[in-house]
Structures are given as C-alpha cells and as structure tokens.
Image (cartoon, helix red, strand yellow):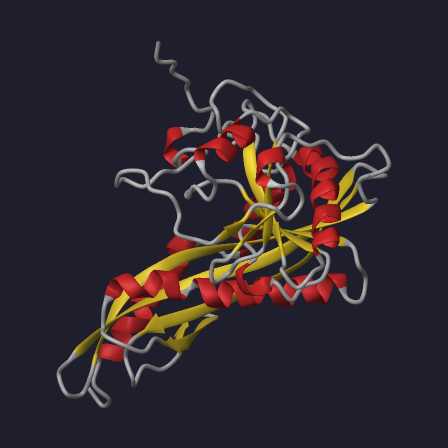
Length: 322
C-alpha cells in the first residue's frame, strides 16, 4: 500500500527534497562511496563518545535582493538589460558555553549588473550601484545568476575578516563551491535537489535517525568534495525529512574529512529549528534564520531604493542642456 507524508516545510519555500520537474534521473557525477566504509558495509553512523561540539561556532550566510530591473539605451540605438541588486553577507558567532549568539561582522554591497558595454555607475540618492558588466548576449535571464559570484566573494571576505587566524569551525549556508580554500570549513546544504547515490545506499540515508549520519563519500563534480548526509532532530515520517548534506574540501586528508563529519554530527543538531517557529524547520538553522533577517534589514528599504533608482534613471534620460 502506498504511504503518503506531508512535508513539514511551508509550500511557499518549496520542499525539503526538491526534485526536477523532469523524470527523476541519477546524477552523472562520479562518486567514490568507499572513502570511510566499503559500499557493501554502509550503515548509519554515530559520532564516537569522545567527540564534543566546539565551544564557538561561526555561521556565515548571504542574502540578495533585486532593487530594480532596467534597460540601457546605447548611442547606436541598441538596448541592454540590467538590474540593480543589493546583497549582504554576515557571520554570526555562537558561543555554546554561554548559550549566546551575536553578529560578528557584516558587509553590504550594491551593483548594477548589465551586458551594456558603456554603462556607468548609478547613484540613487546616497546609494551607489557600481557597474558589473556581464559579457555575452543581452539576455535578462543571465543577470540574476550573475549576482551569486560577488555575493560569494563577500561571504569569503567577511568570513576571513571575522575569523582571522583562528581555527574556529565555520559553517557556510549552502555548498562550498569556490570557498573551499577556507580552512576548517563545512558547507551546509539544506535542500536535496540531486540523487548522488544508488538505490541501495540511498536507502541507508533515508533510514537515518536523528543523531546519525551516512559514511563520508567523495563526489567528482566540478565543485566536488567530501560529503555526507545527517538527519536533524524533528518530526519524522517523510523519508527525507530533516536530512541535510554536509561537505568539506577535497584538499583535506580523508581522515580529517571523517573527523569533520563526526564534529558536524554533534554540532549542527544543536541549531535545528522547530516547525512552530520556522516554516523551513528543522533544516533552516536558528542562527542562520536570525542572520538572514538582520542582513535583509541592512539592505535598506526596497521601496525607497526603487524610487531613488527611478528618479536617477529619469535624470539620465534627459539630454544635457534640455
């Protein structure tokens, strides 16, 4: 008999397991499942009793917002799409001994993303949007993804600024991608959009209980790395409920990756959210949710910025001397 489960996430945020609209297919990524245990011996794992959560954990995240979409008009009569975006990155410092969290640092930037070869910075009131030219065809669909690169760079900058020379555990909300040079850092992926394991090993993952993780395995994607799954505490039922994927750099020896996997297992569940407080519980970690709210506030009032951008664009359209 078929079983049905209701995902705990608010539908407006998607689902905790996001499948493609196309028929489900196995990821083409090359996977080495024998890093920690041979595939035939895979089973749910718990952390050794000697592993303790660190006293201090740093969590980093970034937010972005499109303040206005626009078009440029070139002297030759052609037009190019553009968008004015605000983005911010910050680090929240969690002291597990004191049971306290605080904003350790934040950076805000704004940019005018456009394919126009002649675009200049836009000053909207007291706010400046620096030009970030996008090469290639003038396709508006290419602009929003272009914001991710500068946002990631901002996350790296604020992480380096806050942590300095210390080796405090740094948790990045999302895949590591080009942040793999950061030491003692793990990426926290809260939605699962791809299947990397075969059916037998996937069954091990979906059988995890809170406080258990899968063995570490290695993905050979462009941004490949050591990775593992763990289940956070919270309502159970749906196979992927509360399951997150964690990753670290391939520059580490495999034993260090395994040690980070155990460390994540005794650390991340402490920050799991609850459904009555967060529609993306338990995956949306409490410090990350608070950080996102603070960063969005730092972006400023979107309505005022949109109005200022509209006025700035109107001024730019008036011929000199008119």
